[in-house]
Image 1: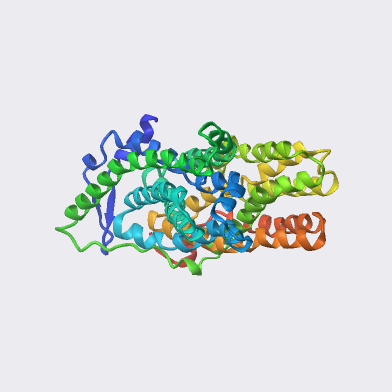
Image 2 (image 1 turned 45 degrees about the vertical axis):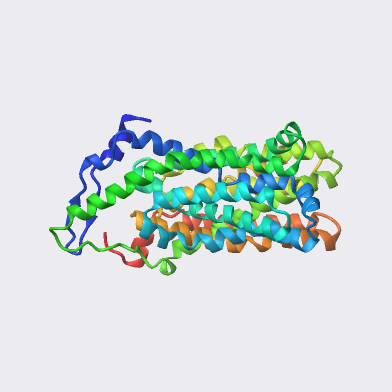
Length: 434
């Protein structure tokens, strides 16, 4: 961590009053240890945002058999993540205003750990779904609030910090997908043990957020005391998000990129296997697609933060996706490695949209509302995608029609990315004054 980052954290915070006075919070409320601990907390939280999903995917057949899940229930399990992200994500702004974003992220990590600890011991599908929903609720809250944490504590390093946690998120996704089966085999072969092991990582993520949450609460109390002799402080609830065209563009862009990501994670190995690629190679190809997100998730946010308009990046990523789907359509087996790489690059629209969320709002209040709106709306949009692709595949008997649909969806995704990338803020669009 650089001296400049520590100076940013130790810079006196301000409280805005109705008279537009800025009341400083004493610098001692941001102790010198806060910066490094906060960075560790952000990285560990990001590492835990996907293993609950991808570890289950690796052992889904064993879990389904072990719990006696019907086909309908199994289909519901695959749709639960996006549904939970949408439903629980909308509660993040209210909880953040009530308890502070750091405290909510701490509680979110605790929920992730609790769910991962409970679900391997479930003896039926209902209990398993309930425990999974607990973990996913914690993930949903953290999904929404990590951009807020970055905006609040690293306002001059939005791109760098977003890149750091996006890279950690991609690493956690890939690690759980690749390591769950080998870990399960090494620990005795039980799917319950293979799922339980990821609770250890989640428990580790809770630890750094405990002191951060306490420091945040002390800062809020100091701010309240500093403003006690002045006009009563007003809680800024942020702009009315639904009035912003940029917010809607970001939400729809988020939804379409999430659709592409879930289709890739769920169906890409099957596409390769149907083209004659072996099962083991198809799994490696999916891992290659996912691993591409690790380095690019760090590079893209930093690049986007230095640009006034991020539409060009959205367009380039979309073109890579179009090339990947065209390759799968024409020669899925012959160019399999190239198509996996191209789709891996295209899927890096996620760190781009997360970065744009931090750039399209001026205040932490605006970021939390924009993050909740864009992610909750976006995940709702993404829910039908994988199911529709599976239906088209089943009824058409091949991948031509599903691939054509995925390529077609990239056209509005590019257009929405260009709109969302324009240099403007939701506060300006909603008429909110600084």
